[in-house]
Length: 154
Image (cartoon, helix red, strand yellow):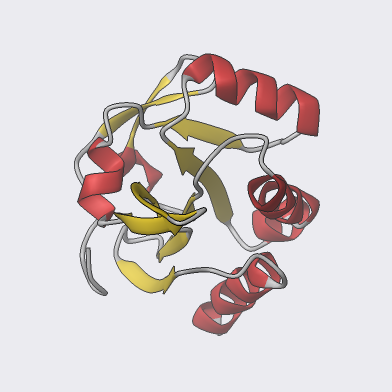
């Protein structure tokens, strides 16, 4: 996935067990953010930050989707507990993670593991990737993504 690429032709499963075809996101700005694991501190903060700004994203014709390898059931619990008003994508088969190249070797507590590197991708209403953030630091990130949408619109 590189700048200018179109939304991948994948159909994914949301936390409410509905299917979503990624090319159907055309017509709006699409924010797709990948995070390591439901209900962990950084991932919870990131989700809450996007959720708090959701009305501003909507006013700017944008939708938000969070993606991890967690199950649909885990996503349902995470959304309910945190009150998220946007959808989470269950990527248990890692198809999206592979398409976006977000699974890399990480060092966790001195052990090397393969895990999701926190990353965000912004697609314009034509379905083209216009900006990406890799190795995201959570603090201020949702605001930065919103700013990128506003900047692109002007």
